[in-house]
Image (cartoon, rainbow, N blue to C red; front, side, top):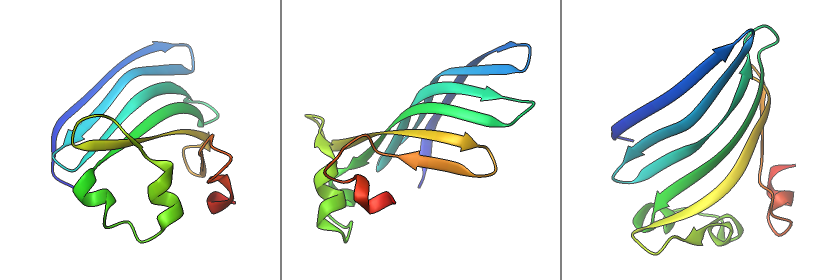
Length: 104
């Protein structure tokens, strides 16, 4: 995707790197949120929101995945998710019982 805005604010305290907000934005995709990375263990814990333009979302082939996105009231639909694990082996999870089976 062509990103027009990339922002990241961070604070470092010992091995703990806190990022908030994270914002990547383009015409078709936006990613926002924040979280913590332990730079020693490489553990991550992020709460993120993926926003896809409705034109892109219509092209997602899985109806269940499309249904997991909620209309934001503009030209985007959003999906909240968590990223945990490590930087090398992230685990993405969607806190939605209707669609969580898609990610097991």
